[in-house]
Amino acid sequence: MLLSKEPFAKQRAIRAAFVATLAAAAAFLVAGHAFAAGPRPWQLNFGAPATPVMERLDTFWDELLVIIFAIGTLVLVLLIIVMLRFNGRRNPVPSRVTHHSLLEIAWTVVPVLILIIIAIPSFKIMYYMDNIKHPQMIIKVTGHQWYWNYSYPDQGNLSFSSTFVPNSKLKPGQKEYLTVDNPLVVPVGTSIRVLVASADVIHSWFVPSFGVQEYAMPGRVNHAWFEVLRPGTYYGQCNQLCGINHALMPIEIKALSKPAFRRWLIQAKKTFAEGKGQRALRLAAAAGGARPQSGN
Ligand SMILES: [Cu+2]
Image (cartoon, rainbow, N blue to C red; front, side, top):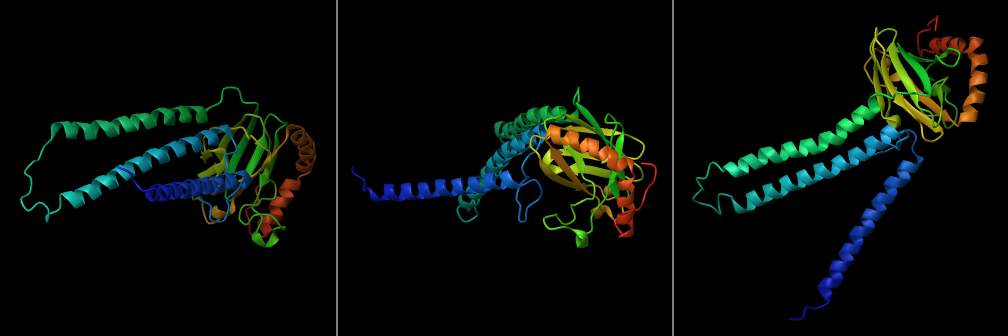
């Protein structure tokens, strides 16, 4: 039997349109990833990963989405089949089947298997992000109501405070609610252990593009690590309700090339030794940003 060519042409057109839509969506996502070091308006999904940890989390998230969509689709299809084939109108005399051992074992065992499949890569990433044996640098982050203090114990104990810049004082190009006076500066391509503590209440040091979210607890030191892959400016926020100015203790991180970082370090040691960090902090406090704090 010969079929007319028309249905095939139509099918091909539909398939081409489908592929084109997928390609456009992929291009949109990739383009979004390439430019984003902070949040973008109408952003969907994670921003561009900036560390090996976040790259792994990102990949794992994509894998999970496939599994979740497959399960969702299967359940939806089963529901539709049940609604169409087994409704009261089509089955005036209902079936009296109440048990089906094989089916019951299957729908218990299959979800367990799916969870095990998910758990293996999940645990691998958890161990990978938990600790690094030989960090090349250490940074200590201390949460205060309501600003962060950063110190570099293996760089001559350099230490400074990082305070929110009110929106009215922003320069062109600076981001609202995310800009600070003294950003944390780190070198790229360097594994850095972050020690996170708090001077008062519980805060959380959260930098999405690094895949780092660590509680800052008074009386204990938590740790995380990151290695920034590309120079750039990255943003985060305190992620634990810590009082009235919780929203006003953003995290701004500048990742520099190693030579640029060394130059910054020399300059920063002079700047902050002269107490300029503290002066900036007091000015910000006077503007309603944070409470001054001595002895950092
Ligand atoms: Cu906080």
